[in-house]
Length: 449
Ligand SMILES: NC(=O)c1ccc[n+]([C@@H]2O[C@H](COP(=O)([O-])OP(=O)(O)OC[C@H]3O[C@@H](n4cnc5c(N)ncnc54)[C@H](O)[C@@H]3O)[C@@H](O)[C@H]2O)c1
Image 1 (cartoon, rainbow, N blue to C red):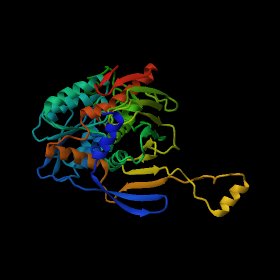
Image 2: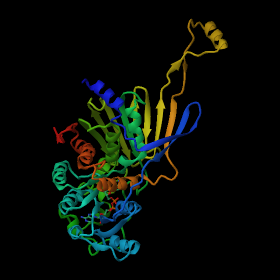
Image 3: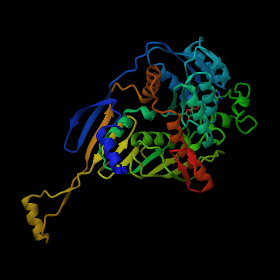
């Protein structure tokens, strides 16, 4: 079957539609319709699921709070390398939670079913592998790995484990992504030819200049363990508390932020990934000793496949830009475009030109020398899809999706293979930025060419 006819067959068969939402049309006027997206199911949790959290910083706490909003869930153990984090757990979750600085001690426990990994990026693969080998299900933050060479190692262990492993790019479980996937499959914007997205920030915390706690020193931080899998150095609180700025621990703008956009794009478009990756950037403003750029551009080629036509992607991230609208993935097709957020989708469909004209206009046109009526431009037809007021949030949904996969022994929406396919082009952006070369990637076989 030719590529384009196979795509049409898939659309007709409805095989690429997510279908988790019902849509109510709320209001319509000439050019805009507003639709409300409503979840059709809630997670049903009969047996208690016990969580162990490794990495109890900002995202670790957001994750566990959202996981615990599901019925019959419990936090039993927490591991972090900084005492301040462990004290905060005891204060907020009670003294019955087991606390440790050694992740192996948490993994050895029988009262942990799911491990949430929310450490700095350089520990994801090792703790992920250790958790699977200890017989735990895993929710691991994005990017699933810190370097390309780690991807296949993790996938091999996961394949043998029989355990669920969800990567934490929560946009994947979002109503916005699911609706966009359905609209694209139905041909709402025609044939996709281009996608773009932006992350723009300007605050110091947005640019990763976090506050260093007063008691953040070698007696409260297990620094030796922190650097035990990377370059040996003397204790440096900046490298521990502002880890995103250093290549040994973080993955820069692309690994931290572009990865979310790859996840959403690959889910919506049903893509394995780009085959060419190119990136430029520079450190323009936040010159605080960091090793990563604060302005970054990425350009990507997605080849024609059975699932989607060939298209290009452009990503932009700027930590010195207080003006640009943020975090929206824009898909452009031959018949229209979609702005895809996690909780909204704005669809614009071209109406093109029409020949309607009043008799007065016709007379005027004739006097102006037109033999046929001049054509009129009409605004595109616009539809806005947004979540219901009582929507519980995308992080709640993503944890619910893992619980659902465990309860029903079904596939998770974002396993290590999907997660690596989203992480790899982001990590290769860094390689392209440093080498000043375009990188060729084989997204099917997960190999740099
Ligand atoms: N999905 C999202 O929207 C999202 C948002 C923010 C961060 N993240 C991801 O979450 C992860 C954590 O980011 P953060 O902003 O919470 O960072 P953070 O610095 O606030 O927290 C990280 C915590 O991990 C701990 N840690 C580091 N190595 C450890 C180890 N070996 N064992 C135990 N604890 C260890 C640190 O002590 C720290 O408390 C990162 O991978 C980041 O990319 C995801």
